[in-house]
Image (cartoon, rainbow, N blue to C red; front, side, top):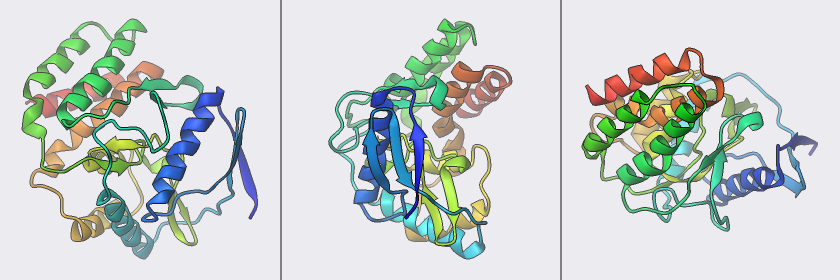
Length: 251
């Protein structure tokens, strides 16, 4: 098979991406782009042929993603197997640290490892004022209401539409920020910037592995970390979208 060479901004970033791809692939539940080699800044991956999404491929993807989420991770915020230390999330040219420390509580992981550190980056970079940190505090005081009984699952962690490559064989995952997380994270990110055949994906997922009641109302909560990353890296209109998500979450 032909290969595609991706260049990372630093050596550890290439190794991080490869570790996530290999970990997700090890469950053999959803197609993941194959890692051919990692050397220095270079990550050689299987070359994939893009295709359009169809109703059938969307439904298959929904079932495959549900099967992945039925697998177990060590905890919320746990790293891919074999990885030590923190990971990264964001655009290749401006990767932000992703704190990885396995926790029993999703709520604690979400606020302390994801939202608060990234909001601080936004403030430190002048993308937002201190009121953003206050919004995180407000959410933190009520975050327990968004808990579900779902255990930690292996999640792609950056599953916006650009990281789902539709091929003649179906949907294949690329470019993860993989870790142990809440399964609703991946589903919320699919909805962040739109996905072809999205409702078919979600319906098939629900048939395979039903979500807890109220999952659609929790979508803004699970989108918040990625919205904050966009504020930190790009600023602009993402701050307004982020504040709207905080408002939706906190009422």
